[in-house]
Image 1 (cartoon, rainbow, N blue to C red):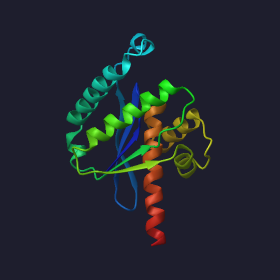
Image 2 (cartoon, helix red, strand yellow; image 1 turned 90 degrees about the vertical axis):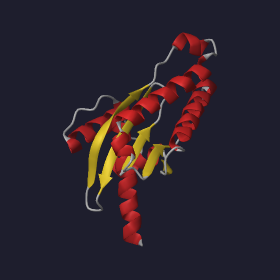
Image 3 (cartoon, helix red, strand yellow; image 1 turned 90 degrees about the horizontal axis):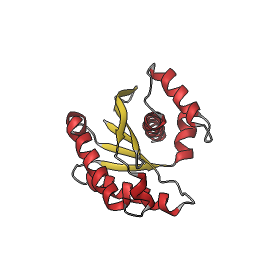
Length: 171
């Protein structure tokens, strides 16, 4: 089983997949919401609160999905995207650090995949919009996603598994 993550400070998309080497099966997906206080963020006090809230959100996520975590061997995360706003870059760095710290409790291999790369592998267009990905995911799985964070996590997981299949064929 793999866990795909579209990491963000407010809403992190996730998707668990079962891969039987024939089919890519979406098992469960959704979002992990982290409490966010924009007033504290503007005052520069958000980082320590964000870390605490982010850690708590992932602890709750783990408790609600312990059966899936026990079967998960790989986590694939969208690579951080450079942002011209230093506060956003710093915040996302904190999020990645907290999430990697959280994962250190498990025997799980961590992989990163670039935004444009996964979109190209999954959708066939590295510049696909959020709306394109949502529409494609909903039609492929016949589901209604909560947000673009969830659909991106599903796309990330699909791209990772498709890439793994292609690599195995080349071997």
